[in-house]
Image (cartoon, rainbow, N blue to C red):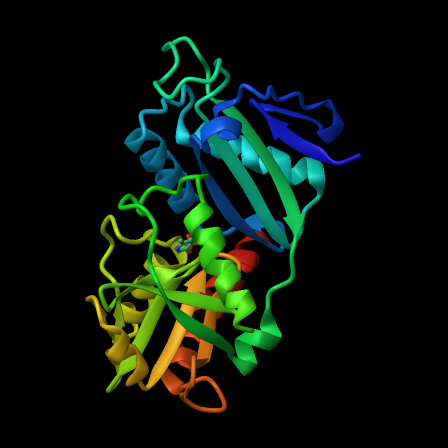
Amino acid sequence: MEKVLWNGKIVNKEDVRISIDDRAFHFGDGVYEVVRVYDGELYLADGHMKRLYDSARKIGIQLDMTPDDFLASLVELREATGLIDGTIYVQVSRGEWPRNHAFPDQSVAPQIVGFTKQAKRPLEQMKSGVKATIIEDTRWLHCDIKSISLLGNVLAKQKAVEAGCFESIQHRDGVVTEGSSTNVFIVKDATVYTHPANHLILNGITRQRIIELGRKEGINIREEAFTTDQLLQADEVFVAGTTVEIMPVIQVDDKKYSDQPGPVTLKLQSLLNEDISQLASVKH
Ligand SMILES: Cc1ncc(COP(=O)(O)O)c(C=O)c1O
């Protein structure tokens, strides 16, 4: 029977009872995280915990446990499910209350649900590269919050699927923001550019790690916005996220960059790969 996390306890999935009065159900009123598990180890877990607490704080949800205790419950979930390679999804909603836009009483406890999913690394696509399409970013202006209200992102991803693409690259007035569930990077003359971490993007944990690892290696990485024209004139493009890691983009709409991932993308992929293998070697 599948084990899941429900308000601090590991229970059978069938035993979870969530009311239709949960605010996640009415309003998408909550926040979430997705943590990658490699070889039984949670990758960049502290960063995910920090962002979860930041997101909760930004929407006024108070968690009555420390980030360390929260993380311990995710580790417990991983152990209970025996997950070796995949993801842990966890969401925190504002809790159960008769439908009303205003926040419920302070006494209402957040509802926490977590589950695991087996997933392989998308190694083939990471090697061959993928296609993307440019669309307008029509989401709200608090994209730094990892909100479970993902309608804008869902519609953006569907546009990619309908265009036969892996991802949509969104822009506001011609300035590239991010993908439907990834951050976007371009390389021009050996310099890497990605949108600054502000309210217009989710500050990806993978994004942060790429910047850290790349700079340590002497790669020039600028957190600077770029336009769709610059995107189309770039030498290399890639998108990044917890499950897709560093995914090379070899075509955006009709613009073909190359038949295979470029050298800077490959270098960053190898740095991230090394970082992931170090995590596994800590365990052995
Ligand atoms: C909108 C958006 N941007 C960026 C990312 C990448 O973030 P991370 O690297 O933390 O997975 C995600 C991940 O789900 C996302 O939904």
